[in-house]
Amino acid sequence: MSLLRRIEDPKKSVRYEPAAPAPPAEPPRLPPAPREGTGRDLSQVSQELKARVQAKLIAEMDPKMDLSDTAQVRRTIEELFNAILDQENVVLVRGDRQRLFEQIAADILGYGPIEPLLADETVSEIMVNGPKQVYIERGGRIEKTPIVFQDDQHVMRIIDRIISPLGRRCDESQPMVDARLPDGSRVNAIIPPLCLNGPTITIRKFARRPLMVDDLIRLGTLTQETADFLQACVRARLNIIVSGGTGSGKTTLLNVLSSFIPPEERIITIEDAAELQLRQEHVITLEARPANIEGKGRVTIRDLVVNALRMRPDRIVIGECRSAEALDMLQAMNTGHDGSLTTLHSNSPRDTLARLETMVLMAGMDLPLRAIREQIASAIDLIVHQERMRDGSRRVVNITEVVGMEGEVIVTQDLFAFEQTGYDEGRVQGELRPTGIRPRFTPRLEAANIFLPSTLFGYERSLFR
Ligand SMILES: Nc1ncnc2c1ncn2[C@@H]1O[C@H](COP(=O)(O)OP(=O)(O)O)[C@@H](O)[C@H]1O
Ligand SMILES: [Mg+2]
Image 1: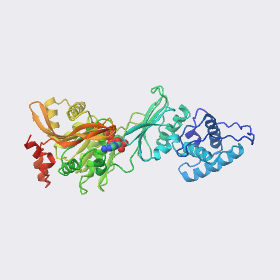
Image 2: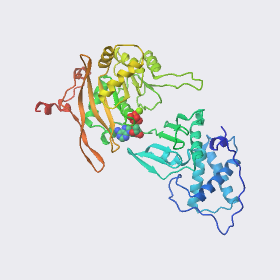
Image 3: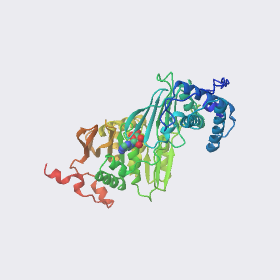
Image 4: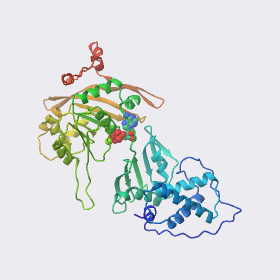
């Protein structure tokens, strides 16, 4: 893809009209602006200057230039940029000149105004709602940024920049796309007429350093005791589902639980888009694939689960269970492939079971409900339910054992539950506490040579209730 095509709207060819030389007595000045960042709102004058310089720069660059040699391209841009400013007789103070250069370089080489957000490790999510509104999530909280794009076309160019290396496009015929940045961040773009705000981009940034168990304890997501408990459950090969709403931290917790799998085991991970980052050496990573433009070549999570069973797995970790694969997963769990882990979107531990039921029905095997419930009850040992609280923190709110069937219903019991004690200074106060119930699967832990103190479950407390 040529440079021109990449950063300019292909429908509008770039033409440079030489500007009348400005009288040297009155050099145009950019208004003073904060130094850091490259995506600040430029004044109207400087927007025009940027557009003009950028158009001229693109026109002069070799369209066949290899954009992957970033350092070289950057040097070329810098030379051209300086030459153009000289030709145009534009005098800028050093800070403004640098800022203008960074913005132009970011549009050509990177992702334009959101480039600094992508580089900022404290930003976990970027939301571009049309050209004039950019939000981020940082430390669990959503904030509006002062960043703006010039117009819809500018946002469209950045979308194109993101997806064109993947051989994809986003236009009226394909107004929604999912993509991934080279660093693994997940991107969704949706454009008018489907989205009335203008072209909208949502980026879930890939954490270079994923949150580990100690981070989760520090962040108050779980306690040291519950972390120890979950580690014991993983080591003892319990089948565990992490459930919760969107963005509640399911994948992150799944990654942490997977880190408890002993290094000598062969782990197969199955995901829609590879997000898990396991540290163990013996890991096979499988990724599902959407259909191509002709509607062919789709490989589902379900296909991969079936295939994984032929790959001599010690553990199967499914990124997210969404539909028919639930049946194959349960069957695997019930036929010797225990110790499997997955996540599932739900509102509560009970809802997790209800959704699992629906997913098995989606597999179209026409099984009686009771049989499905029996499969579920015997396969799933533990549900860890997580929530994104209203202060933005993520917390495990239930650790629930799936005990078995009683008549037609699946019986569960909470082993730990979050008790909220208050809401102070915008923070949710409370703790994940044991309920005083000892899990029925304790013998399985003991068989794996894991002996947990009964105080962990608040056992003493329960004696005196
Ligand atoms: N325990 C946590 N505390 C704070 N932030 C978290 C926690 N778990 C995840 N996050 C952040 O929340 C976002 C969503 O996490 P993710 O695990 O992908 O959620 P889900 O899989 O439920 O959609 C990510 O940006 C992640 O870094
Ligand atoms: Mg997830």
